[in-house]
Every structure is written in structure tokens, then in C-alpha cells.
Amino acid sequence: MSASGNDLFSLCNKTILITGGTRGIGQAISLRFARAGATVIANYLRDEKAAEHSKAIATEEGLAIALCRADLTNERGLEQLDRSLQERGPHLSGLVHCASTGIHRPIEELTERHFDWTFNLNVRAFFKLIKLLMARFSKGSSIVAVSSWGALRALPCYSLIGSSKGALEALARHLAAELAPRGIRVNILRAGAVLTEAWKVVPNGEARIAETIRRTPAGRLATAEEIAYGAQFLCSDAAAGIIGHTLVLDGGMGIMA
Image 1 (cartoon, rainbow, N blue to C red):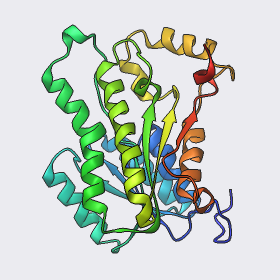
Image 2: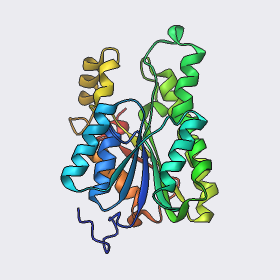
Image 3: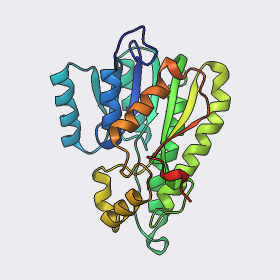
Image 4: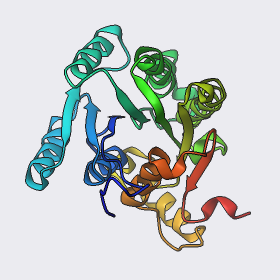
């Protein structure tokens, strides 16, 4: 895809923050956005190896990707992020909240600590980021909340992650209505199953992947790159009229009975 400034799908002259932007779907979004002309700030926390890999790809391709290590679940981390953004100018063109966490256990093994840990990053951090960045968003900015089918459907050992994604989607819809008059668009990108490192900790992961593929009309899982193209569309000027929408990228699985 061209990064020409005359291309409505281009992200040239846009500065976009991507949380969880150095591995899995987040890394794919960071690379896609930078290849489309954006200046990307890729936030991460623990995985230094993945961050260095993203940095190496950016250096090799000459992409404008800056890494920002910060824990978005506490005030200190948010202050670190704010300082990093200040170094890159006062304005921000978009935010993609891809950072996500959670634990795959049955309800009897879950604790309040697990609840707080999951909701603090998946939902509360999104709320805090909007509050922190509100003055930075320029007119025409785009905010994308990355969700999953667990927001609507019950999945095995997914109660906390799924309910946090449901809360994230509800918050995004309310923000879409409230921020639209200010020229800020908010949308939801609901991804189907994508084969990433996260599947290594999913109980019976291989069997669940096989069943998902069986139930998917496309006959395969969506790829991280396909999710990234959807995110690019929502953050581009081509999506200027799309507000409060949920874009589903799941190979058609969601339409099956």
C-alpha cells in the first residue's frame, strides 16, 4: 500500500501511539502503520527481546518507530509515557489500544488480584490514556480499541479477559458518542483468533485452534497482518465517516450458528 500523502489510506504526517506495540498483533500494527507513513510510538513493558526485534526491523527498513517502555497500569508509567510523547511534539493523531493481559483459568481458580490485574490494563489503562492524551489529540484523530470475540461470547477459561473486553467495547462506544463532536473518532476492532505467542498459555490451545479453523468459513485463522490492515483503515482519512463502529476481522467465524 502506498504511503503517498494523496492516498486516503496513507498515514503520512500522523503520529500514532500503539500500546502493546512490539509483539503479536501490536507489532504487526506498528509495522503496518510505519510502512504507511506514520510516526509510531510503540509502548511495551516486559518483553525486551520482542522490543529489540521490532527496533531491528524498523532500523533495517528505515521506519519511524520509537519504543516507549512504560507500565500503563500505574501513575509512574503514565508519566513516563507522557514525557516520551512530549519529546515528539504536542500533537497526536491516534491511539490504538492493543495492550492486553489476563489469565486462562476456571472461575474457582480466579482471585480478586487476577480481576484487578486484567481490568487495570485492558480497561482502566484505556480510560486513563484518553484522559491523559485528550489535549494532544488533533481534530481528525482516531482511537481504536482492540477487542476479541470473548467480549460477546463465552469461551472456556476466558471469563476475566472476555468480560474486560466487553467493558472495553462499552467504554469505546460511549467515548465515540462523546468525542465525535470534538473531531475525534473512536472505533472497535474485534479480532478473531490469531496465531500468536499468547496461544502457548491457553488450555488445550491446539485443539481450540483446530476447532476455530473448522468453524471458520475462510478455513483458516486471520493473520496479525490482516488485523493491522483493518487498524490502518480505521486510523486513515478513508474512515473519516466511521464512528462507534465495530470492525470484525475473523474470517467469517462470527456469522456461523
